[in-house]
Image 1 (cartoon, rainbow, N blue to C red):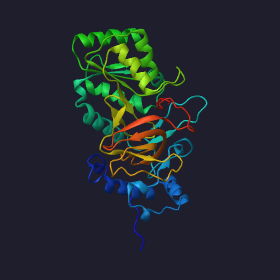
Image 2 (image 1 turned 180 degrees about the horizontal axis):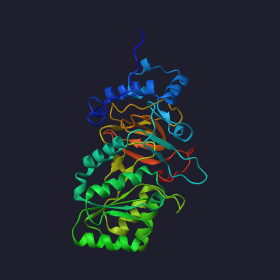
Image 3 (image 1 turned 120 degrees about the horizontal axis):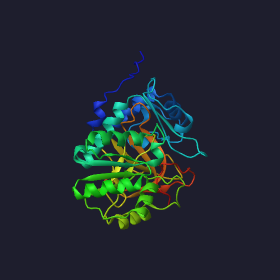
Image 4 (image 1 turned 135 degrees about the vertical axis):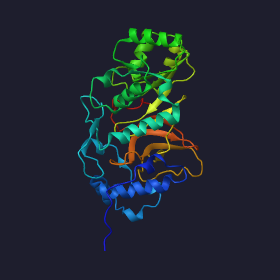
Length: 336
């Protein structure tokens, strides 16, 4: 007698996952998505991979992220509460992420903020996202908007191109010795730094990537050097996320990212997408980036990205740029 396919998954297991039970939980999510995601199952079938043959996170099939441009990637049938769309350019096809439960996304980014930064109420949150504010389907804008609301600080808010007002606000916050987090798209932070350099003592700057053809492509190191000099900061922080995910990794400086417990980075060979390096021996691996995002429960949690990266022994990682064949998206990481 055939076992009935389960179309529900205990969501609390995602955010309570530990390093010890990550693999077991990831394999449970794989089986759930294999049986409830038609696109993903067809992908596995095309690779001649059966559900029962997968016993480690290294041999889970990783769906190329480009599928989000051409397919509706969903696990279980549902009417989406939201459809996030990548920014892209007029020459590119944008990715679409069909979200079943906005609450799952909110829990993911709120829990991650708590893990890396503590209580959002301790901060004034400033968002410098001019290109993203002009759209109504940006996952990045939704995340920062909620942090702005949760912070409760009267000066928390978004800024479009009003750099003078942003400078005045930051100066007031600095005088008040108020811990502040300025989250900005790369080209806007560079514009602001050029027009209004000022020393910062209580303000941290987090860049989210993205040049959108506004400026000459620069490496992250070059961008951070410019911002460090303009604002006299020792470190520039970074966020690594994308439309196709419901989780983000964060860097407190030097371009080294860490993931929340329900997210993991793996490295695959650029020339062989099925050759995934094992991190069990504590070696440093360099190649193309695969991501496990367990919060992507109702989409696909196992993605092969177009980014090149380096994975360190402790699970932290560095993004080295884009693979040669991939297009440059609005929220893409900086080119090599």
